[in-house]
Image 1 (cartoon, rainbow, N blue to C red):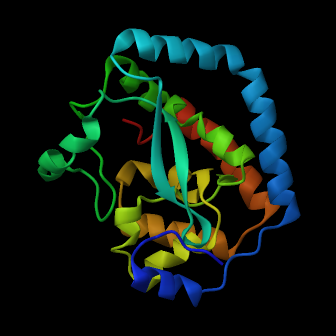
Image 2: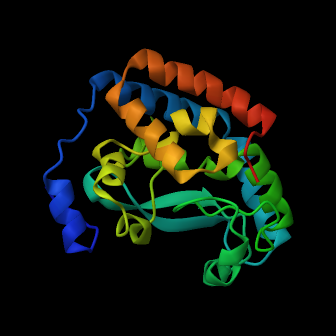
Image 3: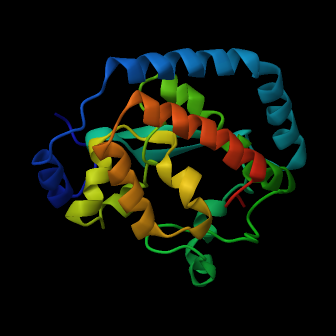
Length: 219
């Protein structure tokens, strides 16, 4: 098994943990739903690309390294919702963080573009991750993939989030996302991984639609 997270202690800890088995039904649902969604919303995706390009300088997509199952890193795709170079400003905004632990959230983040605010409010900025789902790097449902620098500071319990496949949505997103509490997110992610079932995944997908419509915790 290969681990891409650079910190040796993280690799050693992950190597001693048992990975959550990947049921065949989960991969089948991922491929069928992701492929059908991409085909169905293709015209909308093109309009979003155009809106982003017209609204601010830079490409329509934001590609960033994230950590997935077993500590393997991958390129995670999103629609760009911030101005170009926004990553370099995160440190200067740390005192305005409204999240806890490794969660960074600002209700009025000055780095977000006009179109980006709409994309975030509707969660449409996450749609390109359907490509990650098709590639097998992510699942429709699972823990959100963290940044490598966050994983380097994880406790052994927090590393258990990486024993499953990361998801576009998950139990935390449909129950406690608005609170932006990292410890609560870890608890819910581990609860999901401990009780993995097709019924749970389908229920989370249905609840995700309701959460997106209500824009709960999205900004």
